[in-house]
Length: 517
Image 1: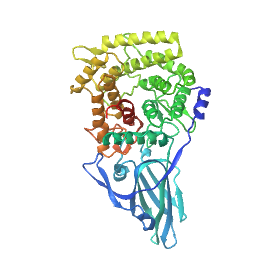
Image 2 (image 1 turned 135 degrees about the horizontal axis):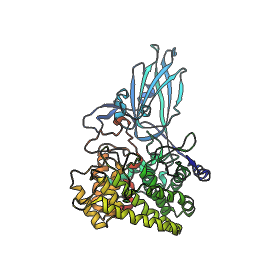
Image 3 (image 1 turned 90 degrees about the vertical axis):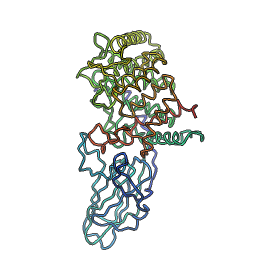
Image 4 (image 1 turned 90 degrees about the horizontal axis):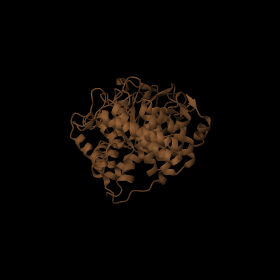
């Protein structure tokens, strides 16, 4: 790891103050199996949340609290003995769920490849009652199941006070309300997108407050776009940029993600596309803020990402496709990533050229412009299949949605030809599909860039609107309308149901669709 201490100091000076809000549960619910629900479980009303204040719960009893909306924060609870003086410790099991499936599905059934320690549960042993319990770990939830594992035959317990201290660095008072005439479904997507972003805004822009809880640059780029249209916490974007710029991999590449604790450090995960995305993220920030100082201090980092990215080209000028690299693009096992990676490189080179011009860096302008020409020529010569009418990827010349979308965003062709390409893509049944809101975001952007805003709006309503119809309080890490239990991790229990890269409907609504209603 390479550390720039001066930049790191600036990042740490930008740690935001947290906004704390006390939130109490709104009702008791019964979580039951439901074949019509997305993950097979639903919650139905089962009583007033105030019942736990005067109830008496003994060994084997349990209840599920519904807080009414998605929360990120710290649980507090008062526990009082009922009956004889306690003659044995109280043992409680708490299970936290963003969705009903995490409450209903037994965690013992989990068989995914991500660590089961991300599953949100706690065993508490309380020696002295009454007690005020303050769970030190931050949780991400709407539902909490409280199960009494054991007391003794002589006493039971009640819960006079249960609440959450919700935390975020996103101040909702900064958000302009939508015009009242906007359609109800658009207002709902805007609200849920904002809530998704808000719950991911902690001391950095986290990717998911339940799982990972890290600063990933692919998520940051999209969160920042939504932030400029809503919370305007631009210093949080700046902090994240300085963290990435100060904590580099050994060869100077920007790492895919950053850990904050115990001290800021870069993960050893390297993603080809994510390193390059430092460039457009910096450009977006500078265009939103006119912050010249940050541009000057981070331009060397951005320039280096383009230099490193160009080193991956083979003798033809095409990104080498072998086992020595990892590129994200989208979660799909069958997706070949050579063509989309080529397009991402071209996309970032073009944005790097804008930064070089802002910096009046003539030497960088020259080699970046030459790189754009080289990559464009190679793309058309080796990745464009004229007969099929698509860009192809890898030895098997795969056609995918990701390849076409990124080539549109890279502007290999003009808007009219790009629109035709996307229309052909929609009629191509053999193309490898998209699987994440992250990739769908880029599809919407590609449609807008191709002069098809009406189609883009329709697709946003179909995809994110589907999540709303399926009960989303915040937008999810994964959503496949054709396979709603899908998980790249082997179990939908570990999926994140509040995920940064899913927040962008609010960005589209407020920036691109505002004149369409």
